[in-house]
Structure formats: C-alpha cells, structure tokens
Length: 100
Image (cartoon, rainbow, N blue to C red; front, side):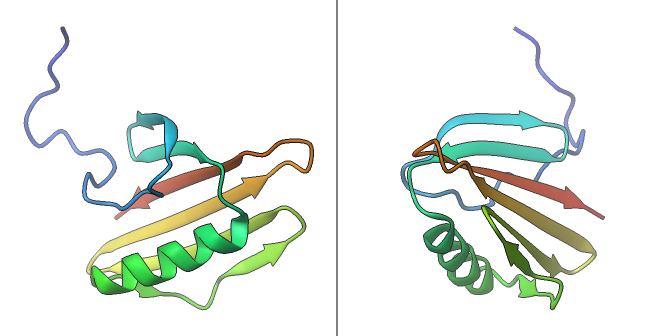
C-alpha cells in the first residue's frame, strides 16, 4: 500500500460526479470517469452542482460536435471540464482538471 503524504495536492476531492460514474481515475490534478448520460445532461448537472458549491462559471464555455468544454472558478482555483461522447459509443467521458 502506498500512502500519499498529507497535503500533497491533487484534484479537489469534493468535486461532484454523475450518479452513474464508472471507471474513475485520478492522476494529480485530473479526474476522469465515464457515464452513460448524454453530454447535455452532464453539462446541466455540473452547472447546477458546481454553482451550488460556490463555483462561478466563466464565459469560456464551448460546445461543438461531440464535445463540450466548461470553465469554473472558485477562489484561486480554476476547474476545466472536458466532456466528450463518441457517436459509436453509449459512453460519455468526463475529464475535470483543477489548477491554481
């Protein structure tokens, strides 16, 4: 068992995830997971949940094709969400990147 040192940083552990999240992976400041939900549902989920948690949505949002990018800030933290869905799959991939 490898135990990381206290206060070693990494992605915020209090970030919400879709209720049906699976295949979760955390690497440093990046969290990825998959959901069966459509992109539009994931976008609405994060707008609602992050706003309720004190995150402010930036105007940098973009949606095109099978991808949506959202940017939120809270204090000195920035959160970028990349949400993608392959037409051939019934899976949406969500990547959350936290930076200061």
